[in-house]
Image (cartoon, rainbow, N blue to C red; front, side, top):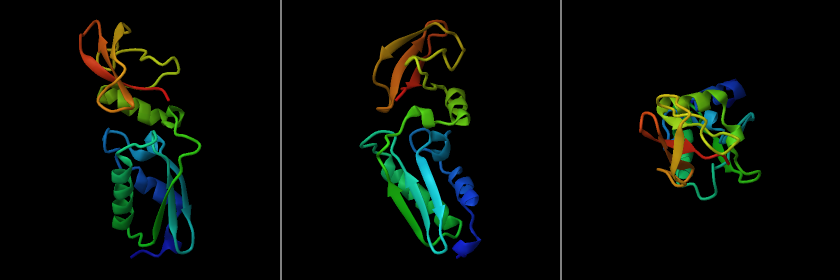
Length: 156
């Protein structure tokens, strides 16, 4: 095992960049904005996480993936803390994360509450199909030009 004294906070953040969101694997949990804090003490690493919404079923998988990645890096003494306040917001998504969503075919959240364009063909002619998508944090939309359906990551 690696001595915690030799591990930096920046290293832990970098390691967590390798942990994908289980529901949208092209975005890391760091870029998703659910990692709230990383504290490296002389004998403990503490990672604070916030779910994207209350009751998110992926949080247990995310916690397990964090533990697995950090143990793989030699961390033997880890504490995970879940904080629900303040509540997660799409404002915490990084720009890199928003770009990765769009590249994957998911329209990133917009302040106006609607996608600006189709993530597939970039047309601005889009229409809502359903407020509910493949996961609770997404809505179903369709492009009127390419006719492809796509998920829109709801603005929270």
